[in-house]
Image (tube, rainbow, N blue to C red; front, side, top):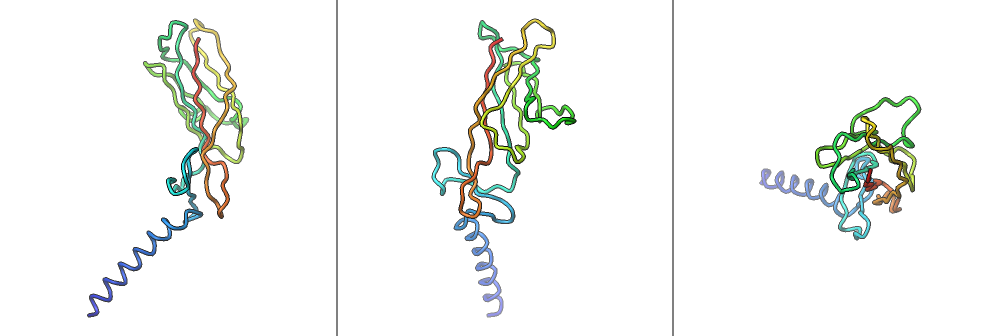
Length: 157
């Protein structure tokens, strides 16, 4: 009898924790419920990660051939003395011309960012693109706030 009560207690306890996360998509253990653009609230997901700014894209030449080794950076979101950190505030294109930069967004919620592509060999001119940022939303105390920012920026040098 005692064993059955103990098992029922554990089942109730585990169900209670799972139910809290599933039924209350806000501020669970410091995390938030994320809803992507076009999703319903029930289709979202829980995260305890800090908000990110995610920038990706490709760099090609005018013949649409991918360019590898191109330095792509986000100058407008850096702190004054912030060191260069690969894939955090700059990236270098791979053999397919692709790059990705993922950094903490911080408190700012920019609607536009500046992305710069630089060819260290000097064969191609440096190019600046001002790109819009879209956001998913987080539910915090039943209010939607912008959370992760996304920008896709493709360069043709």
